[in-house]
Image (cartoon, rainbow, N blue to C red; front, side, top):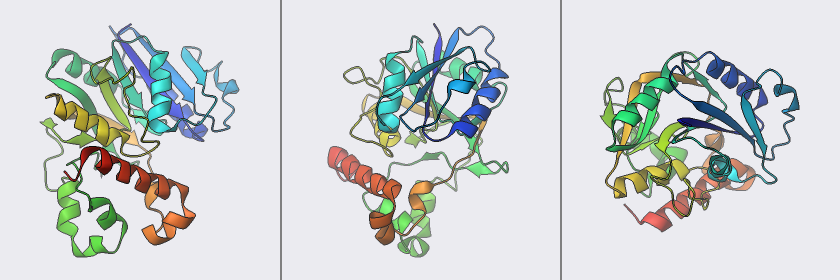
Length: 262
């Protein structure tokens, strides 16, 4: 098996259907592949999708394992030499999967490759960034961001050319392709201490530590119908009222506890 595509679903059935339709129209010529959908104990009934998508393998997780854990669950059941981590809110272009696969297959110096992500209106979504410093998440979530826009702009690489292939610090985990076992620890790709958020930053940090490249590959373009849910409320309200924001802040703390103030 050449490629396994892992999609973790959590209350995203409508977007998942669109994602699977886009994959069914994509170019997989010369690639022996499988698609695995993990229903991450969200309560979505996906039984009516078995007939329209007969080539998909459906897995039910007994517990909500988070993003990293849900993907690890699917990876353990997969067979591909290469693994594509994909969110259900993606729409794949015809050639995008094959472009990512061929790049990583031919460039052994790279451990991770990710595409250019576009918003539904066709505008650029900033999906590659520099490693954050300790205060960056707080600056982004508070009014301080208005006074230090250069810090946020540098972090998101807004002044950089997003139409050229380049080595970056980290890529948004909505769509990442890796080789089986290359960045695995104890049989897992993702560190499950990060229930949600920062699992992608951590993975790319481990690639850097291993002397491998993380590649932003804008020739492959996908639409990402994404809402930044963790930033819906100011941090001082979110800590009390918003579960996703609390998970974001918890992962932020765990990340810097693991890696230090670097």
